Image (cartoon, rainbow over all chains, first blue to last red; front, side, top):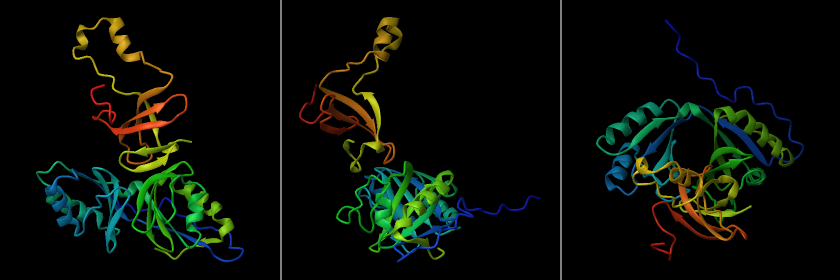
Length: 201
Length: 94
């Protein structure tokens, strides 16, 4: 009998940060083990949209570069027929089953990708300045505010960025094998803004 | 750095995109009927114009969709961006 494997964060042990040398401008923390599903389907098929809404309890974002959410669940627009559904830890399997049942007979796909990425949350009045150092997106509030989400690059690493609020806070979805690199890059980029570890998520 | 307007995501930096070569190259309807020279012509020979060029691009670090673009190879001016399966706006049938 093999013991059930214990999940390990790709950022386990990446908590060392130099003490801020002045006011704290930004915090960094890992949102660990969130469930993630890739949902694909025809956005202009009302049956698909209705079935997804029924299974999720909220609408899929149909406008490019936006996200919708309800409580700890959310959906991010990834492409014209592709979304990332984010769930609480341990809820991904139930969500996937719910979606698959609701989408029977439709041209759609649900794939659990939760273990491929982790989430780094950057929050604070200087969070935008830290991102702007390595991200080609226009992060100005007039084009990228709360509820916006986009796939892009930070320091050449592929990421999904989701702005949560006006603080501003960002959830940055990063592939597990790039997570330590991006964490180190962000903490280095945040040094001048007084970066410290954030509250556990 | 070019600012490329992805037909799905909007304006993004060139670093997010992948160049995919000349657009609108139709695969021969009956490949078996081609001789080697004609097949090589289809596979390898490209226009390489000095001026307006219609080419394929892919939003690699974004929505990962292929699309077409008309770009001037001298000035890099982008004169049209349009989805796969459509023609250059205003130049239908060409």
